[in-house]
Image 1: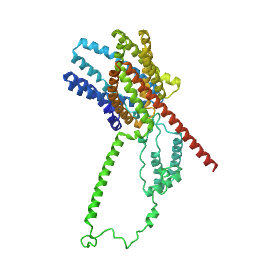
Image 2: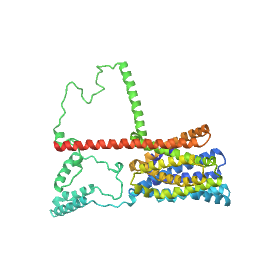
Image 3: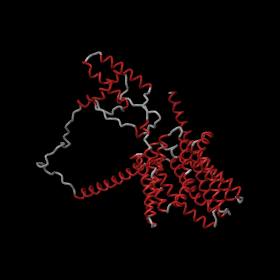
Length: 500
């Protein structure tokens, strides 16, 4: 997760398809190197570093690809994806058990690395959306094109003397933008405006008057370019108190001699300005490449902090759950049955999560909040329940809340951040996830040792989850009030302008 900060710049530079291929290589190569590893350092480098970086790159690439492919049905797409991904923890342990019975440990790991290598094929399937876009001309553009063709036919009847005017519609037609269906239009896709010369501006104004078309000169600000007439009549005046632009240094005499002290101070100031400017440029480069301007948005910071706390609480609770159930007096067989029921309910409600959200007509973040409140209630009931039968019923409720939370956890950030900044936002999110998991897990261990059982740990994790509910609720209320105030101000301005 700490390596996730590089995801944004890398995916923005090379695209999610190439980065998923690189991630597939790191992931499969890291597992493959485990067959030759016999030391703890080798395990850390091969599995803890190389394979984990591959997992982060592939997960970020696939998440961005799904957000790019789907807009209206993104909830259902993530629900189906998370459902299929939930089958992994159920099927892979059985497959590994079968491999270990048939082969030795190194043989099983070697086959496992070949299974991971299938992600190369999946990465090749991630074709960019622009490969499948259809060009659909707008109705207004069709009318303009028909007018141009009519004028073109009239001009062609005038003969060779109007050859220049005959070629002009082709130039203007090339400037008309093409409309793409089912695609995002982001700030990074907008073309740069070319710099028109003075002659081309006046020339295009004449063409616009002839053909009735809007050209790029209409978007220019007044006074942006000087007119040709003004440039022709502008003359430089000689001013006797100023020196000439060029001086013959060999024949000149040094009338004024510079003070060495002033020259020293000037040199020191110039060096300081160079250092500060270089430092500022480096900081601006860091901010730009990692898109750290996202941290100025308090809504994004609130979402990022809430997701990090949610991930920390969920990971620590999942890892501690078997030990908690053991403290509650459940046998190993009962714990396995509890986790199986939990996994089945989790998968079912991952698939149903998008349909539940459509039925309730709530945003992804609101659905995420509802699932967090359900997790708080179920965890609290598990900590106070003694009967085993009731615990099995709570396993279904816990799986339902976890399934809904898993789907909308993946949808909360894409539903707010624009698509062209989603890779950088996800990278920053991963870094904070890693920091909270490292620090929060250690603190949970201290709570467990201080209280003597896992009930105190459950209470601590519920407090962390409840803080996310409070944080997001306050932020959403504040944002809604602010938007209402802005709407009222705009309406008042419209009324005042209409009265005037």
